Length: 283
Ligand SMILES: NC(=O)c1ccc[n+]([C@@H]2O[C@H](COP(=O)([O-])OP(=O)(O)OC[C@H]3O[C@@H](n4cnc5c(N)ncnc54)[C@H](O)[C@@H]3O)[C@@H](O)[C@H]2O)c1
Image 1 (cartoon, helix red, strand yellow):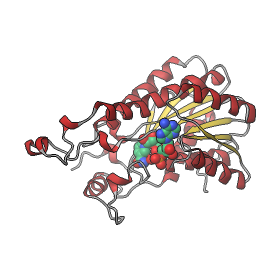
Image 2 (cartoon, rainbow, N blue to C red; image 1 turned 180 degrees about the vertical axis):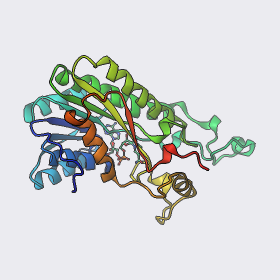
Image 3 (spheres, protein in one colour; image 1 turned 135 degrees about the horizontal axis):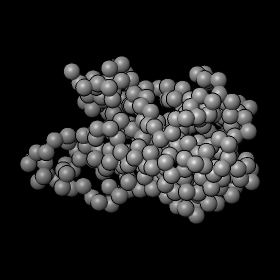
């Protein structure tokens, strides 16, 4: 993999939640290539292990850990294993996150016909349990790992937490109300954490990716035959660079924020990596 910035993470121990997924496996591999020892953590242990094995095969140091970011006891057990096998944690990437397909309205705009239709999820059909699922996964799933792993980081010379926000945090996207609100909470919480830890040498920043085709959005963005949905076409029209991002395009921003020499006074920001989506007014 091409590493866009020459950042030395040798001696650092990093935890990447959601590390078995598409964006975070790319990030885990990149920081391993920069010298960090990486705990690739995911609900899907096999996916985490596969990424860890790929890192090891390339000469890096990594372990795969199966752990649910919503279960504190599992995170505490994971920390014990990580501390024993890799050492004390310096970097946390809170990557686990996503949506719930039944947490979305079927259509963009209110229509009276949708309210009575059986096969359409209108605003009034949104089930609080599905909304709660999305809030928990994104917000509580960032809070709990931060509680568990930041205890290692406090008062080190250089420690970093990176959260995963989204374009939906700036202006909510149609259909995905819960996901949008949960990601807005992540940007807000990034600022809160940055302030809270500001005297401890832990910097807390976030990335706000634009649109990248991954597992968590595949159903919204592609049809079963692989062609783009109408929503994808709207996204591409709203992205001045007229394309989806590639996971590797997150790496420059990630490594910059992890490098104290380059970004040591940058704290509490959410960095858009979005092909201009957030800058574009649509006209
Ligand atoms: N793909 C995009 O366009 C995009 C845009 C903005 C933000 N994001 C965010 O980036 C992050 C990574 O997403 P991705 O697109 O690579 O999706 P992905 O579905 O490929 O990866 C998400 C990973 O999180 C894991 N996960 C889910 N629930 C978990 C839990 N409870 N505990 C531990 N792990 C869990 C999944 O198993 C999966 O491997 C997410 O926070 C997502 O919301 C993605």
